[in-house]
Figure 1 (cartoon, rainbow, N blue to C red):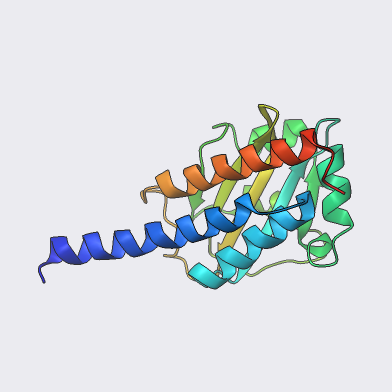
Figure 2: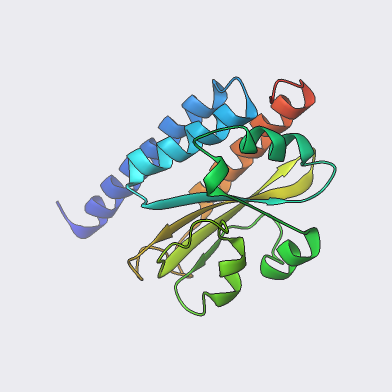
Length: 176
């Protein structure tokens, strides 16, 4: 097997892992269930040591915040910040951000009760009703886990799936 074939094989494996998570997300029956499923999938499929949520404090996200706070599995993995601060940290909108240097601005995304020792991170924004609602964040102690020059297409696609399912759940008032 040459190098190109090996890269294709690895990319296919990664794509299948993301697809597996997507299938489970589509079955989530509640807002909390959606994020519990997402976190479990990311941790299982990719062995990511730190996964947490940052939500934007707004009227649009109020049901999401309430649902996440009601989940024993999620409440300590949540940070709620103002819309202006979120936009300052992530001005790119819904584009995932990968970073492994100058992480200090991203520390504001961390849950106040849990300070993770991270050297690289992926921040994946998502929406509710076409409005930025927050991000799910992956962190690692390895500085080369997430690097800015890596392709984020699969992370962005999964972020879009989270946005769609979350909007369905919020609109259907099934979130709590």
